[in-house]
Length: 292
Image 1 (cartoon, rainbow, N blue to C red):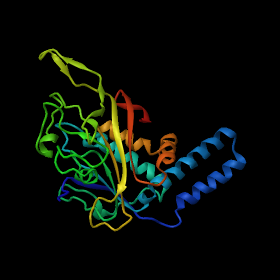
Image 2 (image 1 turned 90 degrees about the vertical axis):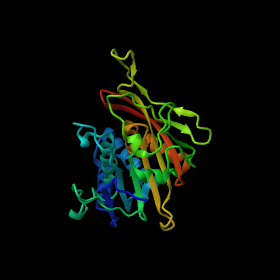
Image 3 (image 1 turned 45 degrees about the horizontal axis):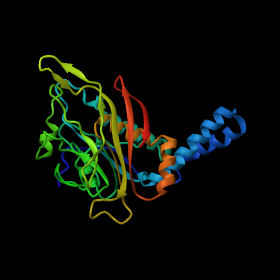
Image 4 (image 1 turned 30 degrees about the vertical axis):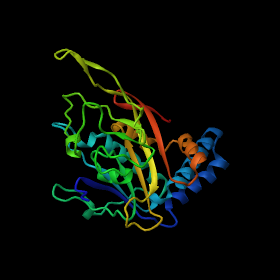
């Protein structure tokens, strides 16, 4: 399989002991003795959150982080893409807990002529959905937009009236035309369960509703054994993907939400899992994220 549309945006390799963890331990120890209750409580909550993150996703100490590269629309700033924002959220979250923000070698920097390589036989964290990201397709077990994923939840990539036969056709959506409403469905029955909602804008020239700004979006967090067949036993894949870009950001933000991590840990401990999160959006910013 070709991965020509991918970019490596971070690479972590474990260092023992982690200087960040030692520093955090000093903060916790001093905080208990010296700081007021409110600060002490905040420190304890962060320590608990970081411990949950490490328990659930410790394999990300040694991982390649990849993001699908959707072609930007005309005059669109690609760095404002929700998927890029989700990638930034993700690496900042993990860098707080593990070995600090990874340093990118000069040879790993993407230029116009070079696409960075990632190692699919390592632990791989994939950001954004299956349309622009072929690694996400591997993790979800789908090769074509109409394939049935073996996972309990999947994306409906063939909404009524918008059936497409390949991934390039699905990417060829213009903001000047109505967009299909990607949803999360039961993979076995194909019943749509989680459906994004929008602020509706009326287009008078045509007399019908055009899908407007996203008001509510959904995302998937998937932790699963590596789906790359030649990867060594014990390797893991982590996927963060939304129906739209805000759902991807919500999945990334959920990784630093102590209550969400605690609820997941209570249910699955260190087993593999699939979780659905929901976010409310206003003024192109996420107001809240919850586990549904």
